[in-house]
Length: 309
Image (cartoon, rainbow, N blue to C red; front, side, top):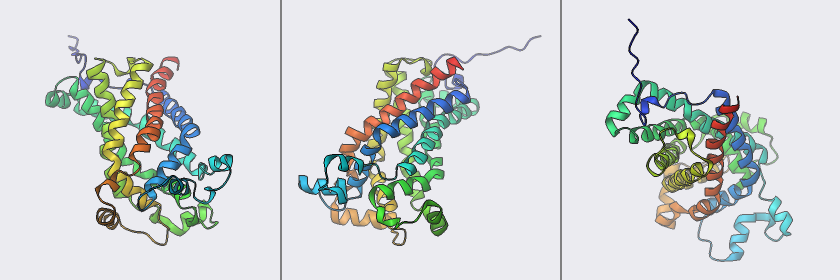
């Protein structure tokens, strides 16, 4: 007698398994990373420099100095070029990060769907359970992102504190600093867990609750765009306080490190609670579109590549 095959109902977390090929996930996420880097690297530099600045920016001239540093009085083209420091580190980090995050989250989702999909459905209900499973997979991948931390540290230092390099190449820095390049790993994981949960969860909830999609891969480019806005906005707001601390840990000179708790205490005493949201406005207005763009592109390209491969 043939075994009875029980198919999970539409909207079930248990059904959300192996929607795309590994090659499609790699190509879609990689293309998203390359496109984001080429368009938004100057925006990222600006946001990092604002977050790294101690004290309040009270005038346009002070803002000019904070953003353009030694090139504050240079010509406009030279100012623009000064926003591309550490492009090599940025390329290594950003493309690897997007492949890991956007391409890796579906693998974590597959694992959860295969082993715990029914539990998500039972705990949260079908549909909501699937969206929370997507968010949980994103959070798991976000925590693991700390393996790429050395490239992120080098990129941020190059953007905000180039004096830390003092003519040293990447090989010499790795030999000299060793595990010091993982400074701030705990704070990075603490930022990434809720941030990635909100990113993938916000997108999944938009597709589930706004567009009532049973198969998220069937979202149109415009639906992916709206879902990406929801996810990116939630992610940036949730992760903002820890992102400021993480950035300040990473932009200090190699020989003068400072713990996250010391930075947190000084920020609270000297700058107040608003300091934990420094750079949030430019991140929402400038870095937000960067995240929306890359996330939208990855969500659109991965199913597209899967169809043609």
